[in-house]
Length: 387
Ligand SMILES: [Zn+2]
Image (cartoon, rainbow, N blue to C red; front, side):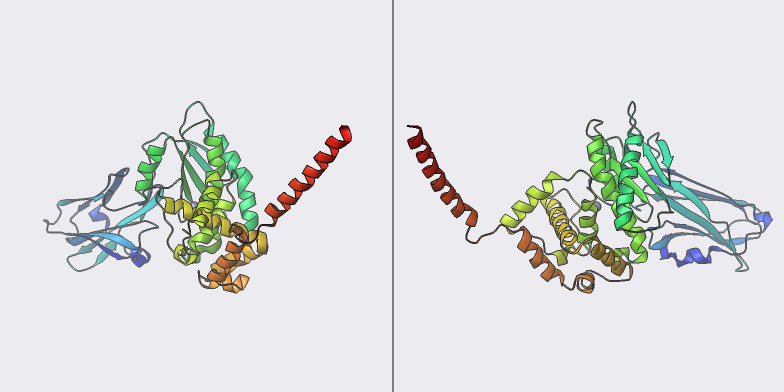
């Protein structure tokens, strides 16, 4: 019987170890994206009534528990086994899985086996790796030093990001460059995301990206690595309050660091303004379209433009103050009023005033007519003069 318990039980995992006579032996192994197997072999001395397997990861809100009632002869060897179906229970790639067993004997005395960790890495590839200043870069492609390309992008962009978002980066960062979009998407499905250009698991300090075409990889990575790094750095700057950060702020800020600007943002912004398809920023507080639909591109384009407006109008100091306020517990409703003195609606109106096409009397066109008429006179004059 498997069930879930508040993850606080990890705190209670320290306890009396079982007597040596029980001689417990455990194993844990996984097939990536498929199954996670646990076994326990224990001698029924003292006589046991129950065994429980506890499994948790940093993203589990609750600890996964499996209970095994025991009815075995004294001194017999008990073999317990449990498989977690990873197509039903989602575990993010590159996370650390922690597990332990507890035993209860017939006198109702509890014993706890030591906590153990499994590095749940995507082992379907033979990753090459390179480490530099707390950054671990993993890649696969042969014949091209993608790892160095990725590392150069990090070295160039991370100081820029940290200068705007001060954060403690001592926890390290792991970046995995997948060899194809298909394989990246397959791994990404395990994070419960169907589509994305890149993925950051801020809690794990992990970034996953496709780096498919060696010719375009440099351009792609100069856009995607700084973007995903921004999410990780903002998570470390806001810690427990990261979930309160408005998504338009988090995504818009990330787009500001893309070293190669995405040309689609400007085109999309123009069309969404012309067609009145603006998504109210209040809707982009907690939810952000994460599929490949037009809505996702629109959300990125308008968040990029609004953050650009905030940076141009109020400066980096105010963006830093907004980050400090968010780390301090401000949310979507309060962060703009607290730091900029504008509600999200007022800010949206201010920003629209700068990006919407001017519908009033067009001075440029009327001046153009004067220029044409004057030029006509000059040309006529010149022709008369020549003749
Ligand atoms: Zn993003």
